[in-house]
Length: 353
Image: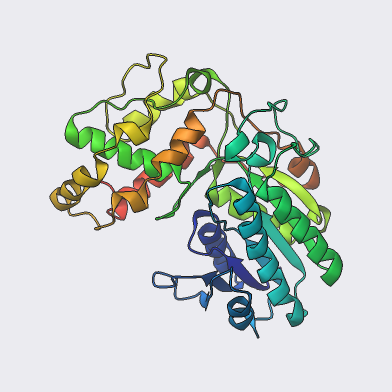
């Protein structure tokens, strides 16, 4: 099955990967974004600020999408603001496509903060692992819950089916993404190698030892397209992770080897990247010059804060995939390959040396 897709957040890690998957399958793809400069020429740009309802309506008018993939979010200072801003972004988009009368399915990407809580109350309540879609919402404000409620109400109003997708930490190709651990670790390793520092695990003892998992952005794209085109997956909230589990104490030295950098022995104490990389903005331009890399600011490539948040958890975090399996999704990814494939592309594209 193919259709006409509108991908919201088409320049991000989730949206960019699903757009490429849709194009490969023969879909017509339009992408909503604010800066279409580097957009794939096959994607029709729909330029709008999602907080401007009139601009969104103007942008989508006549696009007649059959499917909408909402893959973006905006980070605010408080969760109350997150709820307001991210709820309005989705509401504006769904209101804008409603008059088109063509939408059959809307897919919403959220994440594991559904189970862990927002940044303000992060992991204050430890849900049982592995995380299951049947677990109840936590008793905290959470913009994921607001977005779900907006989606459910619009589906009832307009008669489309929906799916909610909850990935763990995303690993995959994207530049300028605020939550990209894979690129962050590659940049961190390059700085360590070029400055003679050791590659220190930045997180907590608990995460070092615990079972965990991640989500390959290409697998998320497969999951999004599968759910949008599979009757059995309609109107379902679904976890999506690679399907394997690992411990950082075993994966970290393997990633170090792939990045050609010496790993430090973990001493049990966190070493946050925001502290380790305080001089990155000064160091990076010389690395770019020396190796002839693309001149992209290190702050655009690396999200120290988000990788610190992921690896600094003091609780166990991994996810159950049984629901998607029972509904027919069979996709899996090898986690080490998720990282090493990305590292290889970053080198090939002259992002890291």
